[in-house]
Amino acid sequence: MKLSSFRKKSPWILHYNAGGCNGCDIEILACLAPKYDIERFGMINTGNPKQSDILLVTGPVTKRSRERLVEIYAQMPEPKVVVSCGVCACTGGVFRGMYNCEGGIDQYIPVDVYVCGCGTRPEQIIDGVIQALAILEKKTKELEQSVRLKKEPVKEDTQLNRRNIAGEIIKTA
Amino acid sequence: MNGLLVPVLMILFAPLIGGLVYGFERIIKARMQRRIGPPLLQPFYDFLKLADKRKMIVHSTHAFLGIMHFVSLWFALAVLLLGGDLILVIFLHLLSTSLLILAGYSTRSIFSHLGANRTAISILAYEPVLILIAVSVFMLTGSFEVASIFSYSEPLLYKMPLAFIALLLILPIKLKKSPFDVAEAHQEITGGVELEFSGIFFEAIYTAKWLDYVFCYTLVYLFGANNPLLGIGLVIFVFLYLNALDNSSARVNYKQMLRFSLIVALPIAFINLLLTILHLS
Ligand code: SF4
Image 1 (cartoon, each protein chain N blue to C red):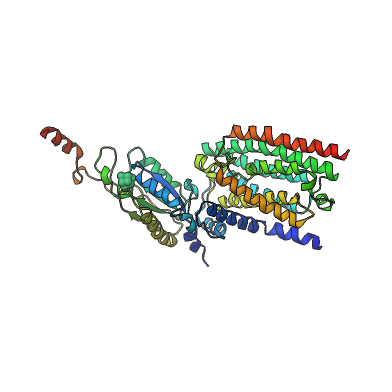
Image 2: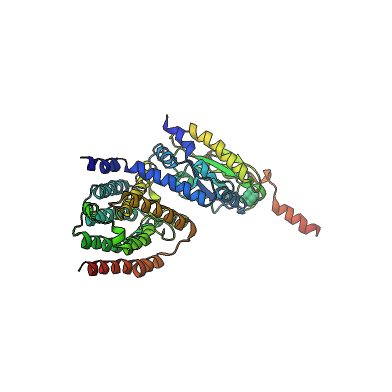
């Protein structure tokens, strides 16, 4: 029996809201409540990066929260996995192209599982976490690097530019 | 020889017993909330998983103090189970808690400091009551030795029921259960002193918590000492009482906790002491 086989039996979760609308956070907390009860898989919502294995991030990374996100990620001891919950953590979602955020958390930290949905359902979150556990079991204790420096930031013209749209609306009105 | 076998086995397997108690408690708590709850061996899964994490420490003194907390707590438990001096047991337990407080102050994390402050305050809340109970035991049996409780003619519960009530009131403070879990307060200061520990060093703190269960339930068992059935009944009663209380109450702040223990629990222990003395004379 290897020690790494116990990882999937007691995954401790850290949940961070990087500027989302709180819709996904409520669904994550709903997973802990009696109806879905993820504690039966041994999961605890620790709230402490130094003792947790899975980082659940919701929300597009606003420019205010990105340092904290990277810091929290760096404080978690390996092996660890990141699950991005909700479409705005995956790509930016409805917030993509706004002045205060770039698209998605994978601009800053390596993401292992993407869970979609604007307001992810608790079932989807549990599914995503279970997939993350399979990845967690294979990981080693090596340090992981942020991918931020290797990636180009999202360019303005690949996105919807809301200011232009707003300008056109004003013009036509 | 036979009399020594059970305590020695209990000392050696104290973390195992405590872990089982903790696992059982998590199931009971979940059932009280109509959840299914984790498997019974969940604490041990956590333990084995934490052993497999990358080692990160804040600084070496911090990690060392954490491990010493565990070792000295185990030592206090050993003295208690071998029938040693009750005052010595209480002060050894105090020593282990103060090591934890020192560890909390040795980092620069604000939550760690808050947790250490609150742990110190909770010591202030439960320690006088425990000592008064120990003094009443001395008045009754004529000795501070735990062994003398076992050789006394009647169970302590019949002789000093008020002391048992006082113990019931401070046990939630000692075991960090709501409504008196200010020292840990997971939603508020995310664990307090244990915040900065990680991986294999957190394990020492995590296991020390299990030892604390064994310690407290042994204290409870002492009240039914020479009647094993009564002792076990008391332990089960206290277990259910603690979990029901933990599930049904909200956290009070540290001032209320201190006020409650000094105004309610301490006088009860004191009256118990007076009654014991009056009864004897
Ligand atoms: S994905 Fe939708 S519901 Fe979730 S945080 Fe973003 S905007 Fe809110």
